[in-house]
Image (cartoon, rainbow, N blue to C red; front, top):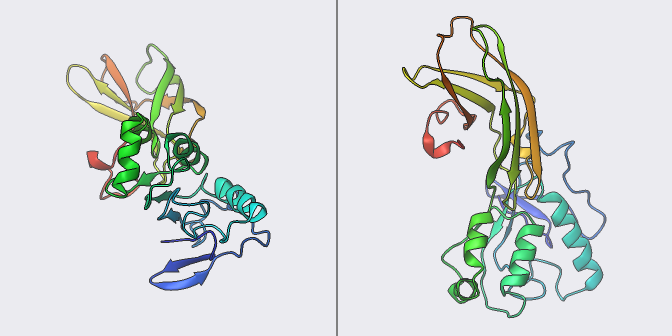
Length: 250
């Protein structure tokens, strides 16, 4: 999928489809339609000349116009809160392509990915100016468990209350839906049980925000007595990938 903020089209199966017409007051995706499965909700943004000029080589309206630029930036900031955003650099353009502006716009537009192989003059500049490590760490989501409180014990068939505070240090929220699941593992036998909270949608764990999850883990009535460790498991929704560690957030 590709959407260009200036031209206003997307590609579905290699067929161009009109998506919106900036700058005529288009409405960005929001919480009411971001996850409804429609084409517009599933179309991401890609900037293939990030920071290369005032218009990013025509990604935004060219020639540069301050009013149009502001409208496009406002639209893109709101929409990429809910859609995938990525791209690549294509030309050194100091000071716009330097660390300060790069970090500002990567955060503003909720970047999930960047091409690590191009343009090397820009990327090497980020290395020498000591911001590449931060950028690499913050692309996409980066979930940090800040606090967690849990019931110390419960009988089989009972419940374990929990309260978890997670901070997303990344630029973006997870793109894919992932069921929220807590897993208990007995420290001796390795026996496992799990419980899900279907009210949680990790796609709403937005970058730069802290999210609190409160609930009660219901224990199976036949759960063996013992001492258990608790883990957070955010697996891929696909049954074929659910147990694949390459597609888990744990």
